Image (cartoon, rainbow, N blue to C red; front, side, top):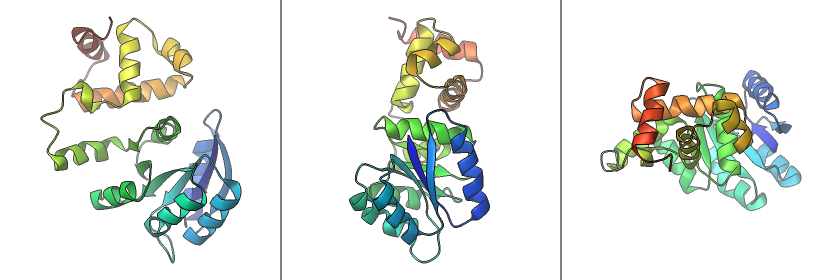
Length: 209
């Protein structure tokens, strides 16, 4: 998976690049320090995924997002921001972003975001997802399982069928750490504190059938 990184802070780019290069199958192909450079690189490199910071000198990431989608239509764009501002999230999704990551999120979220968007899913940092559900007034109406992403539901079904963490990672072609992170996010979303209770939850809902 070829990834382009656009952020005006050198240290942020270096840190994110180091994390990306630690993910199996991911190659950080180049870096941009502003939105205009991001457009040029995206058009030339046609990366699979582009991490695009919102606040950059000159034009913002949100401003150039629609243009980037035209220049590199096959590139999935994941927006990054220091601020968990839902107005930014809505605007990014409306303009074609496939994901939104808050910069102070756990490092494992980078891999979760990459795997999600590469599978055609939309990824939001978990705390953004829960707040978005609250704003739309759908939180209480959705069933417990609807609060999970397709990948999380898949992992939960495998857990219910007795598959261990390493087996699930092998089955799905992801790292053990990614499975563990998904499990932690599921427990957070469902309000479950213990792994055994998560397994019981899955079995009670017939996911082992």
